[in-house]
Image (cartoon, rainbow, N blue to C red; front, side, top):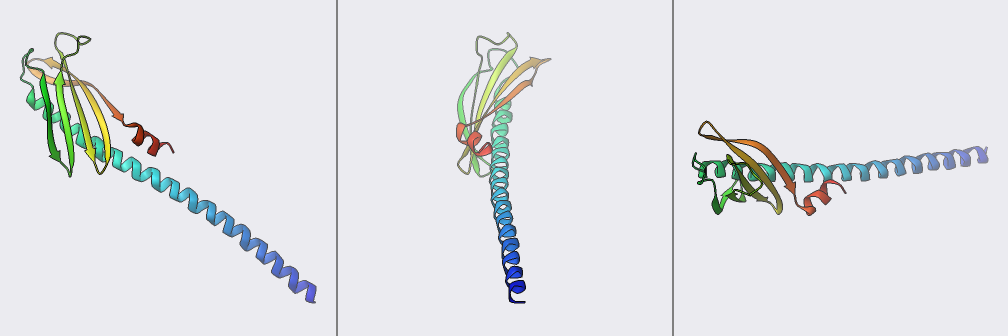
Length: 142
């Protein structure tokens, strides 16, 4: 009878140990998913700050070619900061311009580049690119 009780204790100890190891693994996986989700949320919010800079840049540009460049401007927005500028690289067509905007929020930074086109007297966004910094990219893919 004594051996039967001892084997139950050993068996239950083994089961609890296995459950504990699984639980530890799940906690680590949960922490990893949580870290990536927080990084993704910060990136999305920072991207919104940069996008606001693109919109502000569109307001800076007059609806004529030749007025589509402007020096870097900065603004505080959404508890963050945005820097944006307009230029016309030689690779763009005669009715195109570019706005580059960098949003910074809670230590995160993302640069967005918008190619805009003058169409019937109004600037419209043709293409837009989002460029997370290397630090942001590492947070998302670690």
